[in-house]
Length: 75
Length: 487
Image (cartoon, rainbow over all chains, first blue to last red; front, side):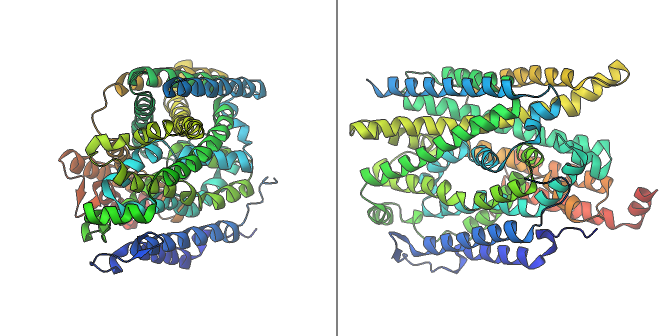
């Protein structure tokens, strides 16, 4: 029987998640006094957007890249 | 009615509902087996599973420690939103394998999977001891958080020790009655209270403050380092914390047991897909609370910053009648969050000690099989003993809650390579994994005890886990190791 596919079988997934996490860390921001965006320093807002990207990619992988095992798993 | 009296009444009503759920769970049990008591008969469906994962993952550390940390650190604490998410990311890679194997082999504790995968009692024992020590520390942190919250909010009317004792007794009560079924059902109530409390917390913070932009401008003027781009070492610490929490949080034994207890893989997948977004509904509001408190409660430093949340709530209670009610609900929600983590940890710790340590000894003594009902009864006695010891320790808090959390993570991270590599790579050899665990634990503990908890921003636990994994992989690739295992 074919083994069900899992997120572990998709190496690009880990690369994508690590890349988004890397963007969420504001190494790219300026050292100057930050501009404000939505009442917060802009770098903090952009960090949150990257983190939201990780959430979306993770949810996609859980729902689409993890196939149910057939062994007695009926809901 | 005074705020302290209203809080005590609210908590009494909440504990009454918990007791009723415990009794209902006891009536729902189908046997005295380990499966039924520790895994709710492997019947946790989607919604209950989601709430129990949620209420278990978000704890006193999140609700009491994190606002204090946002207050101390400022905007760089926005990184905390990615912390809990990292746990779900690591689940992506280990939960499918654990779920698949547990469906076939009926695991009860993480040690069952270790035995199945490696068949090496030394590796199972060492990993289990590390996990048990780490979550015992975690349970201690929850007990301390309960005492801090209750004494802080009643302005000392309920002493810290009394808060710890009463709430610990309540947890023991419903847990001994209904096992994981009671814990999961009470988690649903606690998860809802947590959500309501969070919404109230954020609403009250926004409504009573001057707004986020005003707070940011105040921070830029009075404490600019808390709004500027974090330094390189803070950024390294940020990445290190994400990795550390992701690795360590994913191998919490109580989280692994929920993977075993899910009714179906589909239920588990649905619950995890929602979990991926919950940091934005939990950690993010808590971060805002800490930031908005900066202009309002200037001057709290060190351990005192853990009192940010209690201080804010006391302030709201004196503003208007509806704010008074909201403050009471928030307090009960915070206590619920702490208790929901503590009960899960206690139950899992009890299962590990009873099934993995006591049961083999009982079998040796009896010279054969021992009834599961008997092991379950011993597990309940072990729960009592563990709680008694930790409550006794909890009455002398010396360090901030965040510090306590980190100590736990350093240890737990050393168990992560065994699970992550063991599930992802068939070439991992048991004795190589054991050598990695020993070396990683000695390194992480040695650095931490020597006062070098972080090197260049990177946690000692993460360094230990990296060396741990390198040793495990390196030794597994040696031809001699492979031949020895093959024989």
